Length: 478
Image (cartoon, rainbow, N blue to C red; front, side):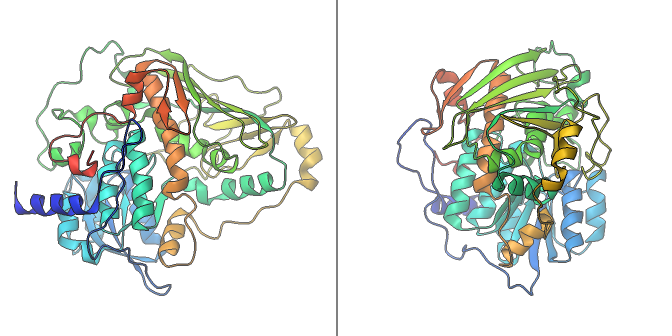
C-alpha cells in the first residue's frame, strides 16, 4: 500500500463512522468530516470550479452542457480510459487542465482547487466517487440512477445531509416543462386520485442480440493499454476485463448496471413519484421475465410496483414494461405515439422509433393522462376531452434554468436543486428493488418504515449487496 492509499484510508476513517445497529442491514452514517472539508459555496458573481469524472459518451455530453452555461471553470478531468478515442474531445478542449485516471488521486492532489464534481460513469462506480467527493465537501452532480444497490443510495443520502453539500441527480427532465406542468396540475387539483400508472420503454437494448442461455460471465481479454481496469471495477468483486463490460455495455449486466429500468425509469416516473409523494413501494412483483438468466437482464420485463395510500391519496399500482415484444395496452382513443424532440440523444445517437415510444399513462378516478419521457409534457386523453378542457387547464411557469444551470446556481446560492439526493434517492431505490426482483425472479414484500424485505431473507441481504473488493471497504465502513 502506497502513501496515497494510507492517506485516503485515514481520511475516510475519520470522515465516516458506524451508525447504531438498529436493523439489518445496518447502515453507516458519516458523523465527522475531516478538518477543512466544509462545503465551499461560491458567490453569485464567481464561477464554480468543476471537475469532470467520466468524460466520454454521456460524460462528454454532460461536460459540454456544463461548459455551455458559462458558470463554471473546468479545473480537472478524470476518466479511467483517459486517452481513448471517446475521451479525446473533452481532453482536446482543455489541454492544460490536469487529468487523472483515478479519482482518488485527483482528490488527493487537487481537493482544495475543486468546488464541485460531475459524475458520469457506470452505475456501479457512482457510489464510491460520490462518497469521496462529499467527504471532501464537494458538491455532486451524479448521473442517474444514483447507485447500484439500495444500501449505496441510503448512504449517499445520509452523506449529503451530513456534509451539507449541494447534490443533483442527472434526470435532466426534472428541470424542464414536465416538472413545472405536473407540479402546477397537481397543486390545482387536476391530477388527483391517481390509482395506476403504466410506464414503458420498448426500444432496443444492447443485450437483445445476446444468447440468454449463457452459463457464465464472459471470458477474460487483454486490457486496453489506455484503461485502468482496477479503478474501473471499483467496489465490485474482481472480474477479468471483457469488451462487453466497457463503453456502455456495463448496463447489461446485473454485476455493473441497472438495465432498462434504471436507465429510463428516472426519466419517465420522476415527476409522478415526487408530486404524488409515492415514496417506497410495499410490493414488487416480476410478472413477466422473458429469457431470464442470472447474468444479464431479461429480453422483456413486466414488473408491478404497489404503493400504499398516502394521506388522502389512494394506493397506486405502477406497472413497468420493457422489451421489443412487450408493448403494454393503451386506452382507447390513445392517439399517436410520438417522440418529443426535446428528448436528448442516446449516447450520441437518436432514439429508435417503436410501436409505442418511451412514456407513461396515468389513470385517475376521473381522467387519463398520457406523457412521454424526460421533459415531455402530459396531455389529457381522449382528444375530445382534452379539447373541452383546454380553456380551463392550469397554466405553469417556464423553467428558469435547465438542470445544469440549476445545479451551479444552487452552489452560488441563487436556487435550490430540483433533484437533490433527498428526492432522487427514494426514486432510485425503487429501481434497485425492481432490479432485485428481475435478477432473482421473486416477489418482494417491503416494509417502508424499516426499509426491510420481510418475505425473503436472501433478498433482504441483497439490499446491502456483495462485500466490497479489498481496498474499497472504507467507503462503506460496515
